[in-house]
Image 1 (tube, rainbow, N blue to C red):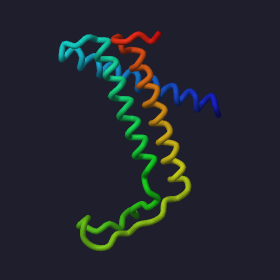
Image 2 (image 1 turned 90 degrees about the horizontal axis):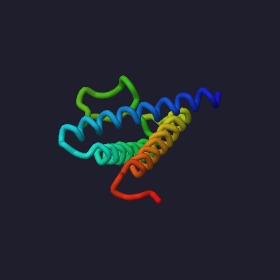
Image 3 (image 1 turned 135 degrees about the vertical axis):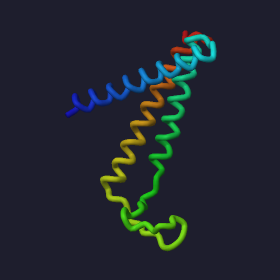
Image 4 (image 1 turned 120 degrees about the horizontal axis):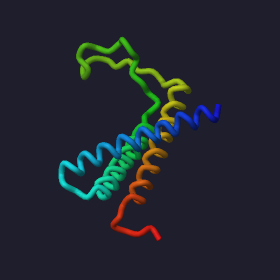
Length: 120
């Protein structure tokens, strides 16, 4: 079980890393920036976005809209709500933790890639 979880987690890290590198380098070439600087900014921005996303996913309330019982006019009439199940609340916490860890790691990679300052 742990090996499969680590494999999926490393796959997510690799996917986030590759997408960030490709996007940052393409944007850096388009604006004529230094590749290392564009990489560090790409990691900073992606990591910050994931940290903020993790915060908002984790702070979602326990009330959910019922499916299929919404009015035609969203802001008029009564609202049908239900309490989230324990599985839904656990999934929100797990997703929030994943976003926060992934964002923190990407920011650390951005710090390492930033060539303006020496790490030692």
